[in-house]
Length: 254
Image (cartoon, rainbow, N blue to C red; front, top):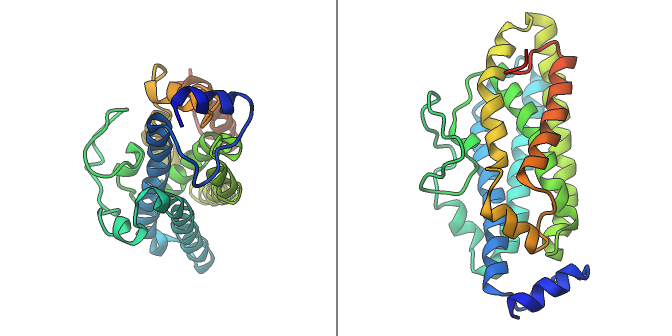
């Protein structure tokens, strides 16, 4: 199918079904979107797994273990879709060091680095329970903003699996915020605020550049609808309200 025909179909509200012939442009952007998601879930799960035994009690450790299991499940759902595009899930999972991390002192911003296609935020190591809860709260909110459009994306198989995935991500964000509130009630805001100051700009960077060519192509193909800037603004509204509820200060706010 040529690009113009496919874009015209999408503009009319038609969904692209599994097994259909795809234009090279659509195929490339669809695969990119799915690979970034799957790699980020695999890397996020591998990093958070190291935090399970930092949980202050058995209940917290059970919840953390379930979040890790959910993330592997989310990655598997999307990797199974990529199987149609020649990706062998078993080989793929073994092809990268998902637990690998770079120095925490780095600030990668939006620039891409070699290796897998995880979002840059998953290249930074977690440091303890409070740090992991702050990162999970901020990134969980980002995931719900970034993924909710995929429920109605033009590729029907991806839209179908996203409903359960987004419910899981929303639940993870709620659990992380609840756990963070408990930590603040017990220990105060000082440690949590330091973690917020570190993670806030790094999670914000996951929304990409305002002039992103990939975002423009995602929208042209009906894979996304909003600009990166619009999604970033939505996330800032959500997390700024959350931080205020918890008695924390929004980085950069006067």
